[in-house]
Length: 213
Image 1: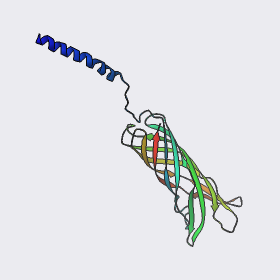
Image 2: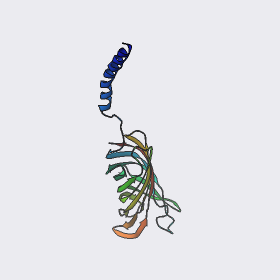
Image 3: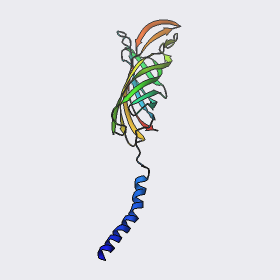
């Protein structure tokens, strides 16, 4: 009789537990993951520094400056992406010579790059590299105070990127990156070219916060 009671108790407990176990096994998984998310956006601030000696032998120096930047990336898969990056405002540069300030220029770059992100999507640290094409809108050139307007043509060329993402959650991450742009521009005075192939070649260092969707 005792054995029968023990068997009956074990059977009853099994019947009670089995529906809960079945429900747990068949329920949807709630664990979030960065894997499979196809779009990411990043907002941040970037310091852009042009080549300090754009005209060798001329003793002209161009100062760098900060500006807010934005980027949006379409992720073909967890490792390959296509990024559109640009300045949300203009970078302002002071141009100096031996006797001090010569003038100022502003520029607003935009770039399209292919990227490769290393490792798994949920890794805490994810380095990435990129290569693409960029051009920069030059405006508000003030390089010949009191004289005819001196303008610069639009610099354009290749851009290279290295960066590191720090995953905070499957959606949110922090980013640090550096970019190098190969750029040449011509200087024009009253519509005539007065200097060719001015070497701007800016590099940038930026930090930001991003989200994946």
